[in-house]
Length: 194
Length: 137
Image (cartoon, rainbow over all chains, first blue to last red; front, side, top):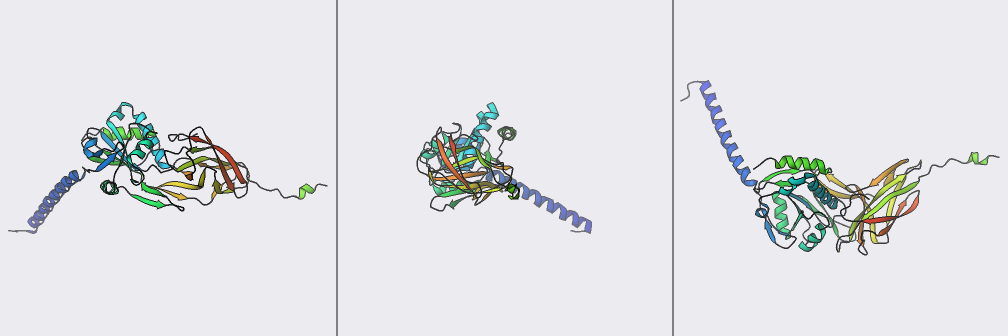
């Protein structure tokens, strides 16, 4: 029974805190669940892979396509140089190039393309639906840009996405031109264990 | 008589293309990128209007851009080369998008590129074809 306004206000605050606390707990749990973003794709050897395939190592996902004349070769070269700059820490990092142009980038095309860079970089493709599902999970934008005279280019997200060895989504990185700087950022992010 | 004193001094552009290079084509790919440094040692600016090459149907000037986390490319119709200045075509920025290549381009070859400028006219260079993992000549 409410005897005074003070008691009423105290009760109100207590209820609000309890609700907020519960709400926070529920949201946190949901976040943890959401952070395991599974996918089904195909590697350059034609084998089916999923998030579990990469368990045990940090996975660094990045998105592009082999018909990209300028940016994607540059990105792949930067990743290769970053791996070198990381030294032994690179042993626990798995760079993964995911095509957002599955129409043209078949496993054979990916294999041939990636052979020009670092053998540690894995290539993934899939059906249009599988790529779309993955892009949705990881919030990757991609869009065809038709060319006069036929053919098309692709606009796409430039962020690199880090996944922990237990398959939890960790964070995105903006592309960094400097392999030494990026190596530092990656080593720091990988220092957190989950 | 010093008639020459009556002639106006004409500002001119002096265009050169330094270290032009083209990335090799990969597998059955019909598209690749071309780069180089366009220098203007003249005292008048010039404008790059178009580029052609005998090894491909088209060579358009494009600019790669990261717009708020999205990579995109936009065609560049006219590129100004400032007086006593330079503009560099390099990975991640301005580049030639060389499309519908007529045959594979392999490292070690040279490819002819013809740059046409508003004032300087046609400037022809022999670009080196470099491996796909090259970032600079």
